[in-house]
Length: 130
Image 1 (spheres, helix red, strand yellow):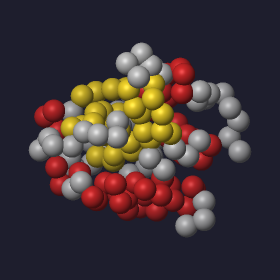
Image 2 (cartoon, rainbow, N blue to C red):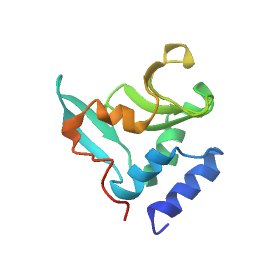
Image 3 (cartoon, rainbow, N blue to C red):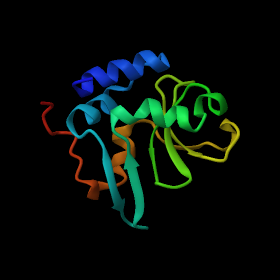
């Protein structure tokens, strides 16, 4: 794959989903994120598009969380995922040891809403798309 757009197409076809527009924009402009965020100085990671298939298959997430798509996490037990059982898909936190959706914690209705909780990330939704 040569570009993020090619990877996006591959991920969408592999999982049978259409990625939300704000997430697509993030992937084509920023690509990924890995940093500590205030106020608790928690670690936030949003994976590169090229890692998504491998990350989602490694943890058997599709078996335990059908119609999920893990896009990042805290580098430990908490995984940030889209819940494609709903339309539009919200972002939720999933514990890597959970067996099903019953422990999912709703985080935001969109990636834009989620990242707005952390203004120090420096992500600006007004930046032009290349």
